[in-house]
Image (cartoon, rainbow, N blue to C red; front, side):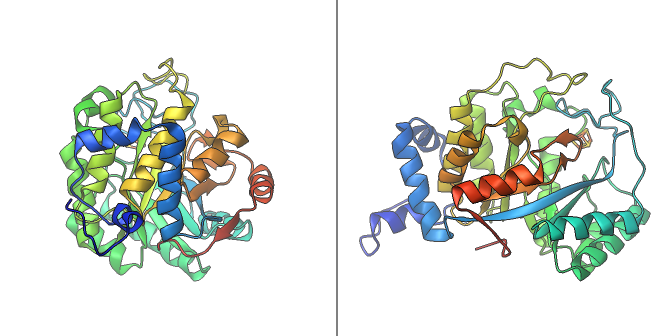
Length: 331
Ligand code: SF4
């Protein structure tokens, strides 16, 4: 990117870009830690209230028996985890959970269903849930797998705010993790969602045995989309007994924090979300993630099927760090 003498160096670093190259992303990762965090914090402050965290709550509305083979996921029917499959939840139970989440401070309610792709009749039921949750004054997000054009349009007409569909990892490493659908399938679904005018929630998982280059390439894939995802969940692998990724060598937590900082620098306006894996992070590590530019969390006792820090603990952590939850989800 050519330097523009009319704007300050800080503004230059905050500019929205879609042309990131591998060598510059790797150079960011390789910065001295303090320098990287400082750079990320400058960009963060230019775009957001640094003490405000957007809080989303996640509910599994249909659990397990999924035909896909994502190597990290206990919901795949192919793996022998302890999970008990559950059919699509009734709408009143979903709305009760949403109300509870709202009362605990969540501004967005995310509903996840373990499907390869939903059937049209499922979409109608999900639309009812979306409308019910919106009537409670919350933003809505769903993650349902791959979508057709018609299903995407129906969700948009039904008032859906966000669609979550993660890329998980780099294109190069992807086939080590999932074989039942391609990277391109994921990109196609994301393009469909974007074209329909639904906000995009898309990120990945680190700690799956990927290389430094894979982490950089995942972030490049996200940041070089025609528009940055409005929400970028960064997950730390939660190792679940019975899944193929159980026993993967643990990632250095400082590399996780660096990933948050690099994501913040590359996607200055996006909500970078501290997602799965928070339960295994110390309060101090989470504080460093917030300093590195994370400004969204999943709140609640469960993240789809894995444990998440108890809401009271989160509330205390917010108090200790002087953080407050924010209602608006996108700068
Ligand atoms: S991550 Fe989603 S698509 Fe993959 S196995 Fe789990 S529920 Fe199915």
